[in-house]
View (cartoon, one colour):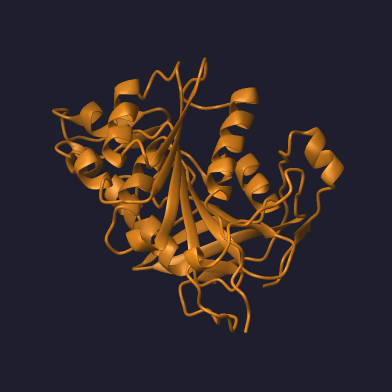
Length: 315
């Protein structure tokens, strides 16, 4: 792939706590067809050793803006970050929260790419004001259409020549965490997902809308459509998400006014304490900034790296 190079000096990376924000023009590309794969020896992650990088190591980063995936009349727009190095790397797909955008995770994407992951952040179709994905309106989107977006992305992005298709991770925040959990449990992809990580996943959404009128409702600069409300009113998310049987990371703050602790505790119970890493940030709210954000990013990275295997060997 042709890439616009975003180079970041290691000294600057370390001085900023290994966080950086990058932007740059890129080539508008579209996925959705077959992508030619490198000739590699097929190995499951368990047939390889865990990858170990020095604590202060950081790749320089390619910043490839504008990568789209098409499926069923929908075009998902997103932003692709990857290490400036040859080979295949694990993939992390990042899902934004309510009325969010593909731009919501610049620090996470930059740091993931520095540590040897391909990161893809995107706009759920119809799920925000001014979103760049097309094919669905704000009256049509629901957590289940968002799940379809994410399932399609898993299927298509793992075909990229720079992606190790045996190591696909999902990450999401708030509503995006809720959708991440739903998608990870979907029979079409659950065996392809290595692990998932979430910031304050909004498992409260069904309770919030239970019994409410099924009419379009303004909310936080956007709206919740009648179809959205109808789709979640009688949903028990815990009866669904437990079908995902691999490891889970959750980061949540004690001052979260939107997602109460009981929803997080029940998720841990559903997944199983032996498979769930829960980090509770004292004094953090629904949305992380400053040191809380740095801690959250470091927590997710540590979780992923403990489950990341060495690259596939070429024949």
